[in-house]
Image 1: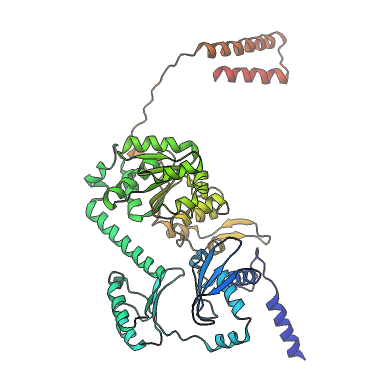
Image 2: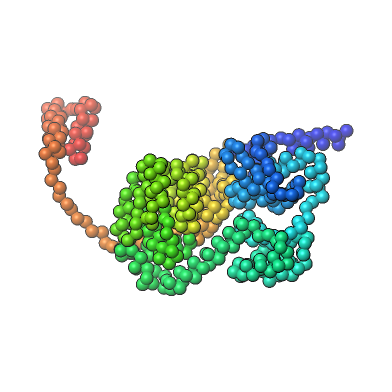
Length: 504
């Protein structure tokens, strides 16, 4: 009898929904987030199409009719970690699962026959190279049952005992892949693993080129020829930092020349790495200021993108190197921007994307580019999730998933209200490779002495007429005060207003 009661309680506990807003005390943050995705998945009306040959351990297309997105899901186990989804959440959440995987597993397990297949497990016939997503991305080898001993012997020169690609093997990967195909023509290497290998190699090659061309760093003569301007040492440092990082944040104080550093880094990447398509996203009021600065400091061509949708599409396609567009317009044109194959995106006043929930922020973060320079004088204004949102545009893996970031660094009371932050020094360490920030106090010695110039501008007849009208009103009120030694509150306000308008 007791055992039946216990089983009932277990079922009730399992069926109980966990809160979206508050983590249960008896669950880890990862377990909580996995359960939330499972709960959400079971209520969705996604559609599934099996694109492989196995009824369970296969590749599937999961379509979300609400968003219109379709993602590839690979099922290899009922446990987290072995499966794959092409959605953005799977790649950054470090959980080994997502709502699309959970939806697929939930539907597959509805069949008694499928549950038996899951229990028996999956023996992968072919070997493959995949990308493992987590705190750190790793290229890993999974050895199948076909030609397993030959693949294992071959892999010893390229992978460690845990199947992780060795650092030096990134540059010999074609050699391994070619030999593996000779052993087993069905050997697979998945696209995201190839993309990551290329990313690592390009980063290494860029550092080598920059070290060769700028051996003395900011003292190298060639950096002085990038722009038609004399750069301060800290500005040269910012330009080289951006080039070395590839994607970075320049968070200098206002007035230290973040714009010229961004233009300098763009010109360096043009000169040394051959980039051709540069997009600048900025507030509407700054579009023509950017155009003026580019034309002043470089010989590059510039187009300010504006007007009706059909004319904007033509402007994006013209031959100019720089395209300048406002945040609002860029958000509306996201489908066009995704097809431009941009080399570099520069975001000015990037606090515009600090709120990750807004449509504009979500669209801007979906603009693909090889390089990125983000400019902001205030990477954090009110909350640390603002910093996470900005960093996610530069490197979505750098600070990990938002839920884990907030769990590790935010302190909340019993009601969920944020009352403080913790271990922010770890955040600084995490992003120091992609963020550079200098205050005016730090670079004061590099700046020239202050030079004051006074220019006297005569007033126009219209201005003098208005000034005289206020003058007469002020005189009347002053005389009234002298006679009665008192002014009413209304007269005092009129007097102050008149004096202010005269000064204006």
